Length: 123
Image (cartoon, rainbow, N blue to C red; front, side, top):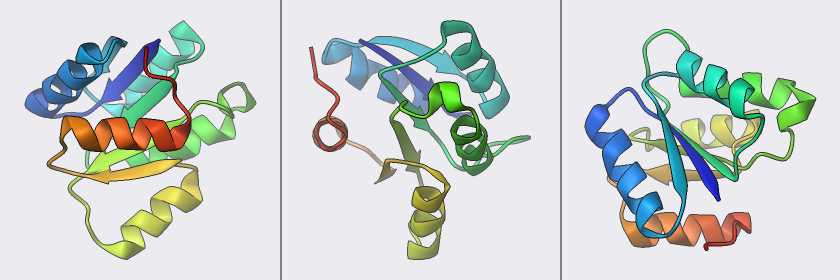
């Protein structure tokens, strides 16, 4: 199982990567959405992509639009993981194509619950 974590915060990337590794994922990490898009293009798919909203350059919301605009990635589960807690942001992310939305700070249990909701089988 492979996960891609896209977050401009090094500590957030590491926390998410550690959680995912603990439950059996191989994890790739990107410092921003552009790097995340490049990694996704290189690996062709992932079992789940976790993306932060607030990043310099391309935002997480823009990256979700970009992923969903590419038919090759139509089935890739996308999870927005962010400090954005207002309902209009949640709606925007889901309308853009995010499959799940998690508000930081996250816990291992929250990530496992969302993965279960996505139907991502935990190894």
